[in-house]
Image 1 (cartoon, rainbow, N blue to C red):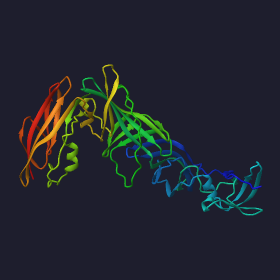
Image 2: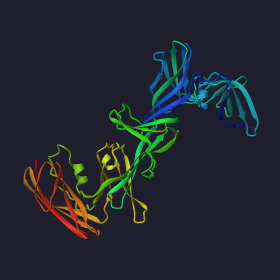
Image 3: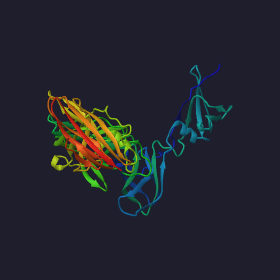
Image 4: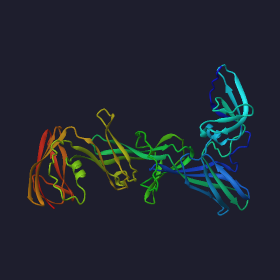
Length: 481
């Protein structure tokens, strides 16, 4: 009868001594500095016992995504007592295929099973590993067995395999010593980002702001009772880093919630140090309270800026040789943007450097229920800087924008006339800023409303539109180049 067999993972009987170094203790303390770019610096303190002469030590519970070129080994004291001869990163891990690949030439026992449940156990030598296209065994008696189905057992573990990625050092000690050593390295797979939740009051004049840190760890290691530091800023690295983590939605905490991080400047970045230790497990996303502010004054604005997208895509410095009026039409744009603005200052109950992140804004309705009204993102924002958040578009306030006249005065001079209509369907007046974008050498030759020069290429018309009413603005701009 033809027999069929099933290949089972290789079973290994460990008869040799342990491959773990006994001269290094488990971690005594861990400091973890996580960067917003998706990587972290690990500083791990361990006890080391060395004999006089050459010593080999191993540390196996390091991050799986370690950058081996970043490893630094340092005895905390005394200085210059130990010399580093070699430093190795060993990542050939224990697996059935790796065991069989390294066991070529060893004695093995293989057990085959037939469909009737009978077993046949033989001893022999492994003469070809899986890497060569399939296992080949030379039994002590009988024919060579190709790709045997069954269970293969080895008497000892092949050398050079590790259950986890392992750091190995060859050290020379002038004298026998027992001392603490710090092992530092950079690992990918750890990152953080900030998320903010704001609650605005009924009058749109003040808000409470809570900041959260979403910390992600898939570096391949767990950091127990770690002292955590976060670095915010654009830290340059020569090689590309992994993509930043995907975050969780932020929760809202009361303004009385305790602040968990202390902030201070560091180089040209900002450092946030957690005031207690925390355990950061592998494959975990953790949320931590970053900051809390209450009763920060805020100003709501309505902006009608119909040429914004067209202008930003058309104009750039040096492009003054084209006629911006040719074929231009924005008559179909009616959106009035809703923006809130606040100052990140101590006088405004804030004043902490804010890492970049998303801000979600809520507002209490007449029943006291929180309702989501929009979100925007901010870049790294120092203290005393202004924050502007575009939350959405107004429902009851709309606008029309059209060019009513275009003439070419000369080869390098044009004149354009515009008409803007803002309609307010609310039962209260609405303040709206009408924005237009200009270029080259320009001059407003006629305007039905007062305007402000925001910068060299932007003007705005602040208007108040009566309830259930309409305001019309007309103006003419002469441009030369």
